[in-house]
Image (cartoon, rainbow, N blue to C red; front, side, top):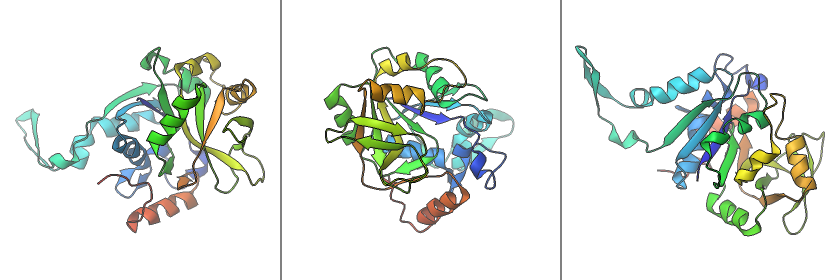
Length: 261
């Protein structure tokens, strides 16, 4: 199943960490958080990615274009610049990555709409942001999505309330969605979605279209949004404090999201 990752935001609340790189390229340990997110999906068998680029997207392109030379020892002959011998084969990744330019000043709804051509007309796909990590069981998430036949499944989590809050009935159906409430005790959007291709019918190419506003509220109103409740680890990297927390987990060898060898 393809995984679409929103990588185009400007990350204004974390610019004190890295002003000149996109948020998905901020490192947790040796690698960008984007790499960590992709590893969690790939370890579950989902190795086809579509990255929605925007702000400083060329730096994400450069990372993947130069991935092998950045992460491996290698030898080359200066008079044969097209021949490189890599020594660390264990670092090789069998990922298929599409890097799609979706606009510099474009909101999330339009970014998703603009990668429609990379998703087959009958294809279900996963969707997430380039700044959140979890120990989510993707197989269970997909099974839940397949069981209800609705347009989209959202993963609901329960951290402190700074994000879009969900109200969910006993069958797992979303009955209300409020973007970034002041203070509540309910579930919030964890940002891990499974979508039918029909999600594109709920979107348009207006650069100001915010996926988390009208499209999601309209899905709720039409009973087309279901919620998979995740009680395990979830943490976004929205601020410098979040970055320090994730880095400390990784450096201590206790990162809950690390599901690969």
